[in-house]
Length: 118
Picture 1 (spheres, one colour):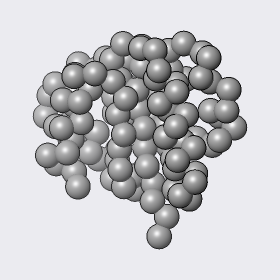
Picture 2 (spheres, one colour):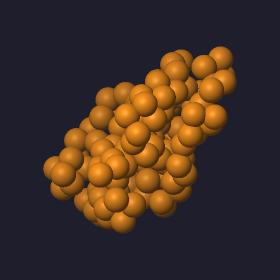
Picture 3 (cartoon, helix red, strand yellow):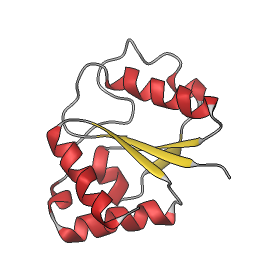
Picture 4 (cartoon, one colour):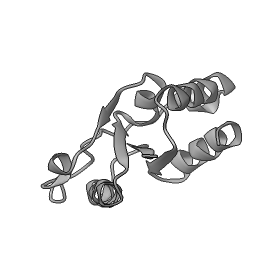
């Protein structure tokens, strides 16, 4: 069975986000996993702004600043309604794992999702 992995970049842009994203996509393809990116951080997750990522999408992004997925902060992730919406979108897209690139606030959002989503 093929696994579906999603990734998003959250919070402020930081050096290395594109490099981390590239590494995730390359590793996913090595193991024959489908990899999807949500644009604009958790906002993109809540709004189902998802696209499948391929090796060609990340081949030449290391030298670029920021993140090709666009990063953002999301107030809705501080509410139970926002968390519920995030979980619903993940289940709708049959996502098996979510990787979040960001800082403390991004990690706290992921922990909140994890409480409701396996």
